[in-house]
Image (tube, rainbow, N blue to C red; front, top):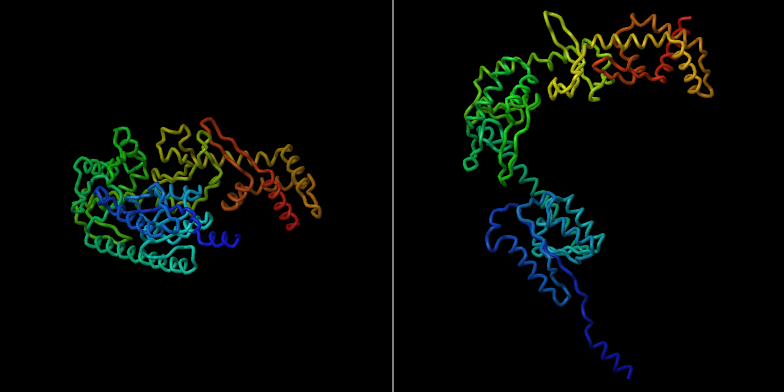
Length: 462
C-alpha cells in the first residue's frame, strides 16, 4: 500500500514556483515614440514571447512596465531603470529581461554595478537576442565579452563623432554648444544666424569696454540698464532665462572669437560660415586693453612685491577673503587689498571695498611690534613656552623671551620682505578689515617659535 502511494506520488508533477519577470526597454531618442507601435513596444513583445516560452518553468510577466524612452544608455539616471532597481531591492522581481544587453547600459562600470545589485538580491538577468542569463558561469562569461565589445563600439563611435566635429569646425561650420548672445541657431541647416537685437548689445559691450576699460564698471552699467545674459529655449522646449552680468561673464564675451566670424577648436582658429558681429579693429582694441589690464600687470607685480597679509586678511563685513591688486597713477604704482565679493558683484555691495595695502601692512606691523614690547605678552609667551616644552627640552627663561622679542623688534626694519612675510604669516592668524579699523588675531604658538629662532640666533652670535 505504501508502494502504491510512492508510485502515485512519483507520477504526480510538482507545481513550479512562480518566477516573476520584469521587462526593461529603452530607446536613446524620442524620435518615433509617438507611433502606435514603436521600438519600446517591439522590445517588449520579444521579451513577452521569451517569457511565454518558459511558462512550463513558472515564468510570469509582472504587470509593471519599465520603459525609458529618450534616455541614453550611458547614464543610470533613467526613471524607469531607477524604479526597476528599487523593485529589485524590495524583492518584487526574480528575473530582469531585456532585448539586448546595451538596452540596460552602455557603460561597463554602470553595468557592473547593476549586475552586482542583481546578485545581492538573487535576481537573474536575461538577454532575449543573445541567449544567456547570469545564473550560469558560461552566461556570465558571455555577458562580459559582449559588454566589452559594446564598450569598445561606444568608444569607436565617440572617436568618430569627435573627428566629425573637428572636420566640421575646420570648414567653419557650427557644431552645437551653449547658446551665444548675438546669434540664434538654425537647427535645420545647422547654422548661426545673427540676432539683430542681441548683436546690438554685443557691439555695445565691446564699444563701452574700449571706452571705460573696466569689466566691473561695465557689468554695473549693463545691470542698471536692465540687460541680462542670453535667454534661450532648449530643444525640449525648456526656457533658460538670462542672468545678471558680472565681470567673468563679460570676459567670456570679450574672448569669444565667434563675434569676429571665426571658429575656435582646441586652440586652432578657422574662418566661420556665420556672419561676424564685431569688426576686427574693435576686437584688437579690446584685446590690447585686456593685455594691459590688472591680470597681466598683477602677475608681474606679484613677483616683485610681496603681499605681507595674503591669505590672512579678510573683509570684516562679509568675511570674504581680500585679494591683492595694483593700479598705476601718474607713473606711480599703488597696491590695494580688495574684497573679492565686491570685485565680483560690484563695489556698492560692500562698505569695505578696498583698502591701501601699505596702510594695512603698516598697522599690522605696528601692532605686532607693540606686542614685542608688552610685558604681559612676554609673560604669556613665557608660560606658553614652558607648557609646550618637551620633557627633554629645556624651557625658556622669561628673560630669554623678552630679549628675543626685543631683538626681533630692533632687527625688523633690516629684514628682507620675504622674511618679514614669513614672520607675519607665523605670528598673525587673521586680520579683519572693517570700515572703522581692523582686528588682528595672533598665534601664541607662533610667538614661541619665533622666540626659539631668535634665541638660537643670539646663542650662535655669542
